Length: 368
Image (spheres, rainbow, N blue to C red):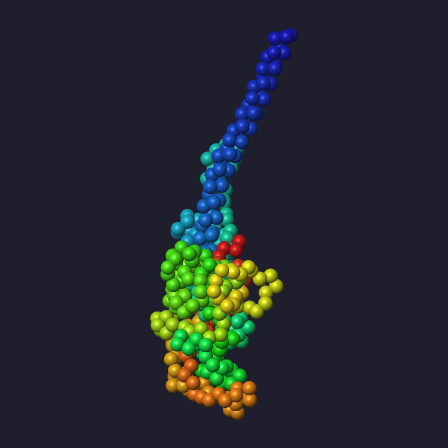
């Protein structure tokens, strides 16, 4: 009788061991195959990210949705080994779902031979919230919004030889006809000259001490340097940037070197509920809160407005507050055009996914 009990117990132990080994094998299969699935999942996430960014970049470069979809599929499938890529485009946003079938190594023992792994990413070509290569000429956002695309701006540049002109030698829209058929005249209170050193990322490394752009003074040499240099020093928005309003001489050679270039101009606001901190160590007279970036095409340097822009005349009749001003004057101006084409974009910036108005700089970023 006792022997029968021992044999029965041995049989029960064997059954328990068999069940335990099966469970252990299932857990081993689960660990191995989940690890493999996780690796493929990361690969598919990279594929979805790359595809979404490639598609959004095509949109930012002015390509159509067909080209954007092709680029998204190419980067997800050809370059990152996804088997399929479902691409959807809506209002500047590119959504990519990358998928790949994964064969199981051990799980077939428990009846699972394969599974599909997917990953999703969304990238947007939208208003930039950081950018590099900015021009040091800034405009009020309110002025910018009132100017239609393709309209010319004639920006009073001042005169290096006469940095403090008399009142009668200043260009003021109170006394001069600023709304011209060819465009709009922008005077001293309608623009600012900025110095990005100390607020733009990487500026100290890109411009070692001793170079003009590394000086913190808002002077002529700094202005000229920033006008000439399209650098990778980036500005994150909103940002408080030192600068000057009023008369500030611009460099003729710097402007002429950029003729026909599309340059990025900061746009500032007068009041922001929670403004960013402003740098204190500089020799600039003012500070400007930059919230947005626009694009202009550089047209030309105007050395003598009376000859090159004769439409710029004194008002008739002349308002009494203008005193004894006489014309014509030889104002120096920078002519630019508000640029709103789809390639008003940057490859060295980021975006938050918000739809931007025409003429606002766009950038590509993953937003989901």
